[in-house]
Length: 92
Image (tube, rainbow, N blue to C red; front, side, top):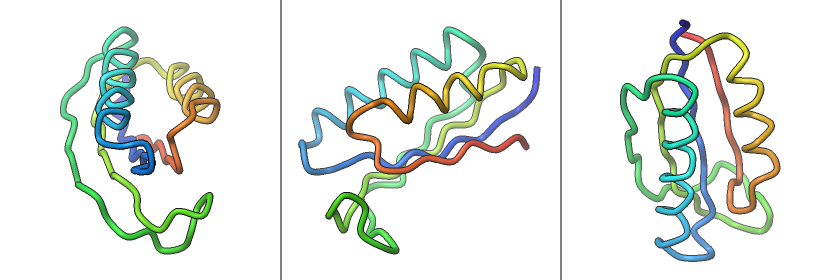
């Protein structure tokens, strides 16, 4: 089991309910394939540059541990999910 950190930026255009639904989706996905250590809400912040014509995003930081194959699958799922503006997954 390796320790990982994932930063996800969610779109605020669809409202707070859609952000919470995405947070729950990714929390349960990570928990199914590893251990969720923490989920930190960094609130709505200005983006450094516009992404999909949006100037603000809701930031969440996930700390988790899983096997070495899961982060690639998580990244694939993040990229095909509507409502995610940007993401970064690193191994600690």
